[in-house]
Length: 116
Image 1: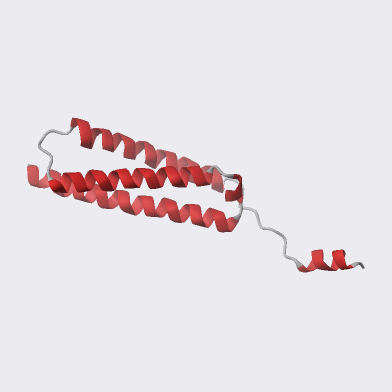
Image 2: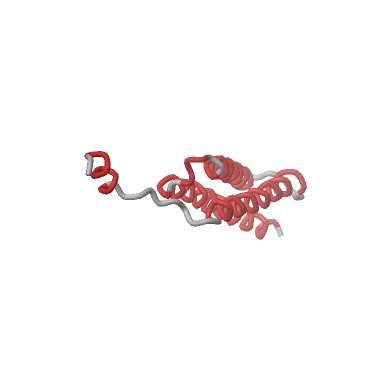
C-alpha cells in the first residue's frame, strides 16, 4: 500500500447534498421573491393613503428583504452550493430574508390597521 492510498483511505469522502435539496430551496426562494416583489408593487404604488415615516421604514425593510432574497438565490445557483457548508450559508441568507420580510409585513399591517 502506497502513501497516496493510505492518505485517500484516511480522508472522509465528500458528502453531497441529497437529490432535490437545491431545487427545493431555489423554488422556495423564487416563490418568496415573487411575493415580495408583488407586495412591494402594491405597497409602494397602489395602496391608497399618504406616506408616513412608518410606511417608509416598512418599504425600506421590504427592499432589504428583496435584496437578501436575491443574494440567497444567487448563492443557490452557484456550483459551490452543492457542498453542505455552503448550502447552510445559503439557507442562513434565506432565513435572514424571511425574518426581515416578516418584520416589514408586520409594520405594514400595523400601518394599515391604524389607517382604517
